[in-house]
Length: 162
Image (cartoon, rainbow, N blue to C red; front, side):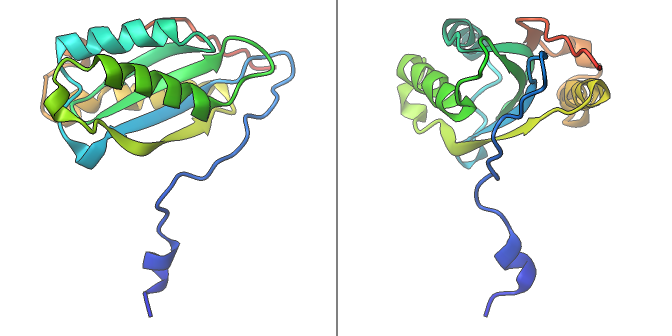
């Protein structure tokens, strides 16, 4: 019999529906990994492809994002209310990126699923961003987060505490 901690280890992220936040658009924090954690993403052509694809996949808006060599963090909010399923949006843009991938021999690109968490308070947004913007420094890729070229903000996702 397997030990309890091994049985309880999740293979897939828990799926919670996006909660209605009154008249405020929900903000989700997502993490996506490359298949087998291959170092595929931190290249200028890939960064450009991701940004172009996120702009085209208009059902959700990408706010701040960080592209690391083997994973991507981003904040997203629905472009319309009620929001469409975030899983469908992620699958859509991952498919677009895969089709236009500049180095076909690197396929498959993506881990099967993505992790998403709905933020509940404004300070969570700021805390999570502070943590992820320092990822390249912690990984020893740059000495300051400002030096890392594979990050940005496509849309300002404002948090309004009530």
